[in-house]
Image 1 (cartoon, rainbow, N blue to C red):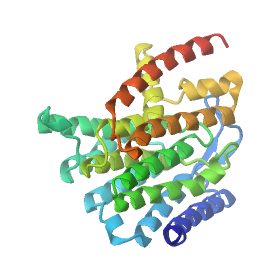
Image 2: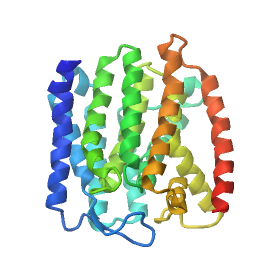
Image 3: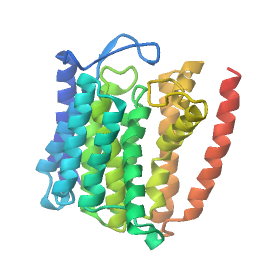
Length: 332
């Protein structure tokens, strides 16, 4: 373990942290986030952290063992590179929402149809339907991260917890290559997180958020394919993200609002604006994801395996939580 930390983890962390320092010291002109009426921050902050995360991730793959980067085929690496290129172009030139969606579907198609890698739902549905559902899931995961990257330290800290949990799931099943692959992501994000925790000095931008969203969906697929966990496990692990995002989008659709435009309707945004502040809200979100992770992995560690009852309990918890939050926020 000590050898792993100094040989692999520490260099990736230092690359991420160093690049973030440089991007703050020498900000790129077109990658600046100026506070607007829908922002939760003030002033002008660089949003080039995604560049540092991507470069650190690539560095981690290069120095890792063959068993680690062999998990990512040519098509999977193409998808990762393309999503970064498209999102960087969006950061620089503000692509239209329609063009972004089309390109994201094409990129996800590399994983689903060319790899091919998709959830087969235990053969319940036809293959084409399974592929289409997985395609939609990947695109939603990409945009979900983008939607939820609106608070200092939120997306980065949640990613560290989530990918560390995926690594632990691999460790409990003895898949060390999968452990190392997820650890590379954790260390790539951790260097950025040090400068993104409230008050943030740098943001990850679309390049960072869409990269992490794609990796979340991709590594969930890989872990399921390798028999490390059931289909519902990664859904529960990332539930603090997708429950808030999905509920908010559906709510905005029913109100006939343009849900793809910037807004401050997510629960985490409304909680910050209610007066709780960034640090309290982000700490609560971290705690929520840690609880999801512990409830998922502790039974496995105890030798009981994955228990789907845990997922049903969380459905009730989220349902009650949404009602309580709506009532509480309405009274603020």
